[in-house]
Amino acid sequence: MKTAAIILFVAMYTIMIIRPKWRTYIAVITAVIFVVAGILPFGSIFTAIDWNVILMITGTMVVVDFFIESKMPNLIADFLLDKAKNVMWVTIFMSLFSGAISAFIDNVATVLMVAPVGLAVCKKLKINPVGMIIAIAVSSNLQGAATLVGDTTSIMLGAYAHMDFTSFFFMNGRPGIFWAVELGALATVPVMMILFRDQKHPVSADEYTTVTNYFPTVMLAAVVVFLIIASFIPNKPDVTNGLICCVLAVISILYDRLHTQSFEGMKRAVKGIDFNTIFLLMGLFVVIGGVKYVGIIDDVAGWISKVGGSNIFLLYTIIVWGSVIISAFIDNIPYVATMLPVVQSVAALLGIEPGLLYFGLLSGATLGGNLTPIGASANITAIGILFREGHDVSMKDFCRIGIPFTLTAVTVGYLFIWSFWH
Image: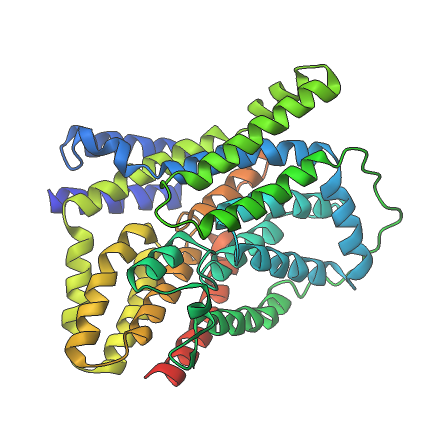
């Protein structure tokens, strides 16, 4: 079963890279093969799919549709154009803005909120939005590791290692992963200046867009606030965040119905749900569930521990960079769940502070998804948004930004964590 799973897994990713337009079909077909072949039992399909992510995407897409229709993204775009010197700095501001939000709410929700602003900017400037939207996505993935509430993997680490919100800033008298992430984010600014060096033409806002309906903006702000509040609730259901987004989506629909006395807004919002991205994610969740079920992720974790041996620096290096590579192809949630007890056991065996390996694991696993366009849910969502706007994103398009961004941020974080925790 393991051999068959590996072959199918590699074949799936290979075809996705060669034929990006087939991604959803290939993911779903591979998922069906996994179930039919018994790699993942039929009864495990439901639990393999991360319904929290699916519900979050669906609900947030509806809220964002009303947000876009209100013209608020255009107003924010006008403000950014007024403050930025040129297109390059607009892109950098959008990336940093995305990262700041993502430090407190889920990466996918961040992309869904910020991408419309990026698209509005690009439409005003009549430029290709691919680069800017990719920068928004990879920045949201980076900052997800900054705080306890920024990403699912951060929440998992906090629960497993009994960390609270402040532990990500300072723990045991040492700086936490927040500072490593923020230094990494700052280090990516020169990288983006190089990547977007040709976009130096000046920008300005001739006039500010008029927004007549602020309720969608309130709903979007409510998504942020309630997701932050929910992150502090202990023992909450796994689908809490998704339900929050869906409830706010329903409220948005009901308000629009009462406000306009029409069902047109509801029809538009439902039609605007990106089912292509949703089915792609569901297919990938089932495939990753099968990979985990047959023990491949456990084997990888054991291999990392074995190769690292008693050399702390080598072990730390393998955990960080091994996690980067693995998370480029495998969802980081099951990987981190598997590695946490491994890391704890190794740290206890070697008699070292587990924070070194914990933070190394989190930084590598969170950022690794930025190496490929399908390595993280936020990237898949961003590419889906671009596709709906008529822009195909090739592997080359994504890697041109994702690889230097990832290598820079990981290297800075890797050195920072080692400096303070070894």
